[in-house]
Length: 249
Image (tube, rainbow, N blue to C red; front, side, top):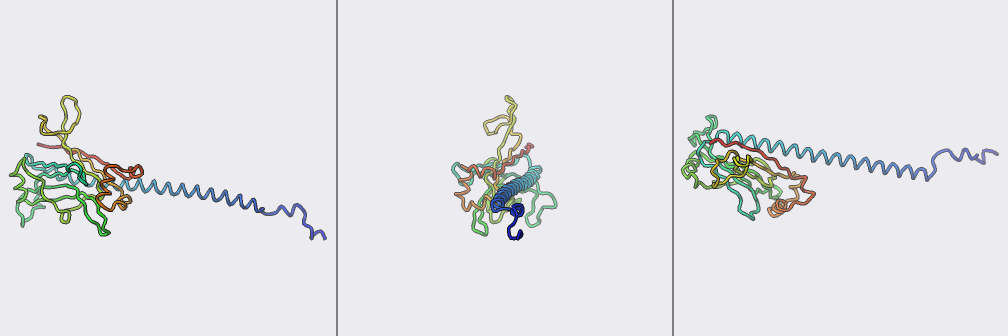
C-alpha cells in the first residue's frame, strides 16, 4: 500500500520543468556570449592578417622602386605628374631613367638605359569589376633616348595597362612628392621649381584597401566616392604606408 503513495522525498528527485527552462536559458546566454567572443576574435584576426599582407605588399613595392632608383642615371629627366583636379583616379605618376644591368640587356633592343614608369590605372577583372592597380612600365633604350633629349620638356610616356606589369591591386591613391630640407626651419617640406635649395628625397605614400572592401566597389565612381568621403566603417580597411627615397644628383 505504501508504494502507491510516493513519499514527499521521492517527489523531489530529478529536475522540475522550471529548473530545466532556467538551465536552458543560462546555457543559451553562455553560448551566445561565447559565439560573440569567437566571432570578434576571428574578425580581429582577419583585420590583423589583412594589415600584415598589405604591409608585405607595400614593402615589396618600395624595394622594387628603390632598387630601380638606386641605379638612376643622374642629370636625366625625373618626371612627376599629378592627376588633374576632379579626376576619378587621384594619383601621381613617376618616371625616371636608370641603367640596365648587363644581365638585363636585350640584343633585340641594344642599349644600356631604360625609363621606368610607375602609375595607377583602372583594370577590368574577369568578373567585370573595375579595380585600380599600380603598374610598372619599362621603355626601351631608343624610347629612353628620346626622353633624355627632351630634357625638362619630357612628357610622361604613354602607358597601356593591358601590356604593363601590375605591382599592387586595390590602390586607392599613390603619391610621389619631391621634398627638400628647409634650412630656415630644419624641416622636410615639399619642393618646387621656385625653391633654390635642391630637392633631397622623394616621399612615397600608397593607400590600398582590403580585398573584402574592394568587392563592393564595382566601378570608377564607387572608388572615387571612397577616396573622397570614406564611410566610418570603411576606414579600418584602408591602409596607408609611406617611404622615402634619397635623390643623388
